[in-house]
Length: 421
Ligand code: SF4
Ligand code: SF4
Image (cartoon, rainbow, N blue to C red):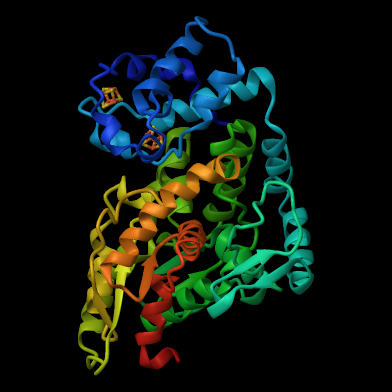
């Protein structure tokens, strides 16, 4: 099995940090905590010291290295393009190797590595939903009725699907002859919590005549395990997904989750072997739709008499890889939408994989800034391209006492298409 890079393999990149501090202005964690250990250069220096054995893995070091969203905003602004998020992830793997995973990391990997157990837990959660959760006003989410490990009682959560998305649909949905075939990598968010996004995906691709294959044996992309430092789990999930996706005769692997897109398109690509070829044919859904004529088809529809103001949040895993134009192009073409840009649309929402589990209070402060920008934009709806961002943004909007709903952009697209209603 191919392996993720060891911290030692980042020595050169660590040495490229010239401590200029340009990253301070762009780190969401530093922006609310104002603490040097929270900013990229502090974490790069700590990772370097861990690598050279200059410091041990005492509690303070672990705390500072856990204080990173892995959002990549610093790298995008760094004059030397120091990949802090990769260095921090490698440092977490080193820590897990030497000290073992945290208790949450152990619980997480036990579930992620066992899709059958994950299915069973999700179905049980879905069946007991009304007992476990209370509904928030305006259908803006759920809150736990009882305290539960790793989940803050004040956190807005989406409902768990009574039946996972992949169990609701056939594995192959044929399209028109001559149209492309795509493998739909659903990810866990769509499969277990937001099946409506998956249904919208299928209806839109049916409208375009595309054949869709939804491999039943796909697993979690592994991004939560990257965040937790669980190297073996990431490598095992990658191998499972490589096998599931490579047995499909698809032109593209298409994702509707920014994290899954980065998982297959970036993290797996670094594993070498057959992974770069898989990464090369992996595409975000809005890039795919823009390439296959959807904006033009939408622009030809009659404009609605009353349009709804919608703003867009850029998920970090797309923004840092240059995918910002296509979702806006599609939003602007929607007949029922008036697009409004919010300030700092590309700033991290504060979720950061396991970050918001360990550091929910800081995550909430980052989310509060986002919510203020959403409120100031005048938008009635927030659209994005990542189930994780939807969950975090809805929580932030609710905490701010605002009324906006957060949706996946696919849900707005499907509402505009006449043949899919
Ligand atoms: S990580 Fe980049 S931006 Fe930050 S201090 Fe180092 S060189 Fe400067
Ligand atoms: S990856 Fe994000 S959270 Fe981590 S140091 Fe860079 S900007 Fe800050």
